[in-house]
Length: 331
Image (cartoon, rainbow, N blue to C red):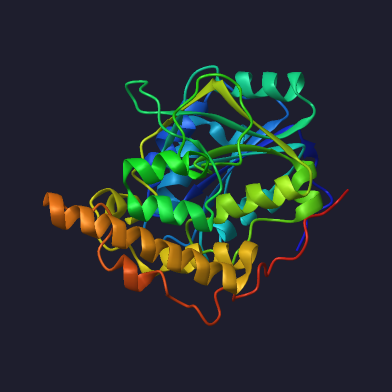
């Protein structure tokens, strides 16, 4: 599946993914109004919401006159975050793609700031904007890769272990200057066309979560550079991505697809043996934190039944296939 050759190539395509959050999508489109140039477009992908998302979004586009720069396409089914974004990426031919969650608002000047980043740093291929709350307080948006040792640090959750493995901590402190990153949140990410042309589309074997880590890692291994660009401000409301983040914050048990994605990532980049190693190191860290909780009467800092769920799908962690949409067109 490729581009319709009759379509022109735009300088920027913004892919806005929706799953049962039509009001958020309309708000995001409203925040984009007036920020786009003539050769820039937005494609809203409805990921088979099965509710009234399509008519609500279509009506808003028509009533506000956004059809000159925005269009709505429907996915054939809800095959996950990667698959939905791939539908949008293939819907428009562009020099660069800005992927946005539906639960985002684009601050005035953010698109211009990203244009500036593209012009000033032609050697860079992935740009992460600053994610923030509505009150402008910053959110963590750039991270280090999860590794088997980072699983030990995460499960232990103790000062001495974290100090010893400081370079393995996945979420470093927020920075407000341009810095390279290992991976960034795909709530908002700008990616040049050349990356997709070389490494392909997003891996559709992930239903939700870890697909952004996977893509950034594949891009880095292929030689592409990344840069956090805090001059571009994006509000991330964290209200449209499903129940996982809320579950993690409350230490509740997340859906099984979260662990399926986690285990796919570890098996894909470290092998099945690496996944087992990551799980065993997690168990060691959990033993440490469990002893601390028992001695100090503290509540667990990990999710319910995590010690069981990390072994999910151990026999075939890297199935199904990485993609069913084929290669990204190279020309």
